[in-house]
Structure formats: structure tokens, C-alpha cells
Length: 264
Image 1 (spheres, rainbow, N blue to C red):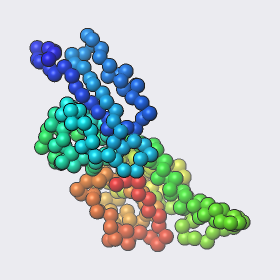
Image 2: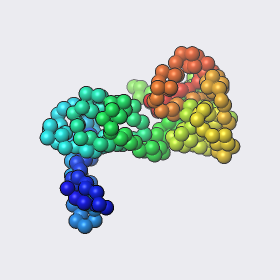
Image 3: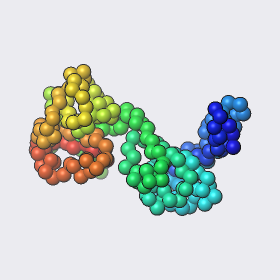
Image 4: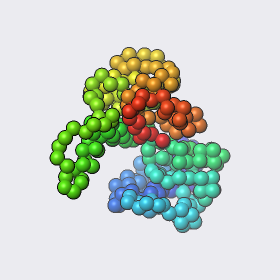
């Protein structure tokens, strides 16, 4: 035990990064290495390999040695799901960090019952996902995928116009954004740069956000779907939003509309 500010603290905390995302953990080990006199505790860090990059399916949490599970206080994970049964495998767990925005892969009810704090990384991948969403919009709306498929033929097709309702000019078309969080905002700004008129729906944002970003706001989700010639989904997966986008809303989209889903 170590003393700090008159209170006794456990001297060693065990942290595990379970996915195995990186070739080595040299940087983490250097950051968590014992530093006498600098802090009243030690950190023991382990990089595991439950779901390394390039592997389709994960190993189970139970494959972690029991001794390590018993001592683990903190978990870092990007892709792993955690059920109530998995939570029970870590009796001394205090915090779990989802190394991304969404945390629907974690059983938060079970974690709360065990007094485990759940954290996320709200700004993870904001630009990358927004770029990807716009890439999908352009691939469909400008016929890039259709032309690519024709060039894959044997022999490759000669260049010609493609008569498809997907292919259209972008300028002055309406791009709808369902959920104007960090990523939704990044998509909206990119869409404006391409000449789209941007319409968004997000009932949780304060008044004035539309004016500060020069966007149009609707407070009726059905209006969003009716008017969006391109619709990009960016809502988190919650009890309120799960299953929210179904036939009743999708059937309102204009004929030939494009739907892009980079959310959950």
C-alpha cells in the first residue's frame, strides 16, 4: 500500500488493451513504466490479442488467463463486445474505455451493477468517417461505382453516359443529416463545399446551431426524409434510436434518393 494525501492507495493498477491492435506496446510500456517519486502508484500494462487487426472473429474474454482477469482494474477495447457474463470474469474491474465513439457493444447495465465506469473517445474518427460518408455519396451520385463496374468488364466498356436515376448534379440538391453531432457536422460542412443545400434533424441541439453553421433545420423527422435527395445517418445507437429508421420513414424518401449509413 502507498500513502498519498493521508489516504492509503493500492500501489499497483493493472490495465489491459485486449484487442491487440498494434505490432507492439513499446510506447505504452514506456508511458506506464514505474517512475519513483512521480506518482504514488504503479501501472502494469498488458497488450493482449483477443481481436487483432485482420482477424475476422475474436477470442472469448475467458481466454484471458484467470490470474490476469482477477487482477485487472482497467480495460481498453475497440471492437470487443462485453456481456454480463463477461463482466463477471473481472471482479476487480473499475473502468472500461471503449476506444471509439459508440458504446453499445458494452452491457452498461451489468457494468453499472459492478460499479464499473464506462468511458468512450467522442472525437475518434470524426474526419475519417465524414470523409468516408461523402465518398459514398459521391460514388453513388456521380456514378463512380457504375463506371468502375463497366471498366471491370472484358473488354472494358468505352466511355459513355450512364442513364441512371442515381447520377445527378450535386449543386442545389438537398442532403439531409440525421443527427448533427461531431461527425454529422463534419459531413454537413463537406456537403456544403460540394454545393448541397444541407437540412438536418437533431432534437437535442440548442436553438441557433443552424444559424451558426448556415444550415437549415427541421424539427420533424418525417420532413427530413421527405425532402432529402441524399440522406446521411449519424445518430448514436440508443434505446430511442434503435430501430427508428424503418419502412415508415424510408418510404418517404424521394424516388431515386441515396441513403448513406455510417452510424449504428
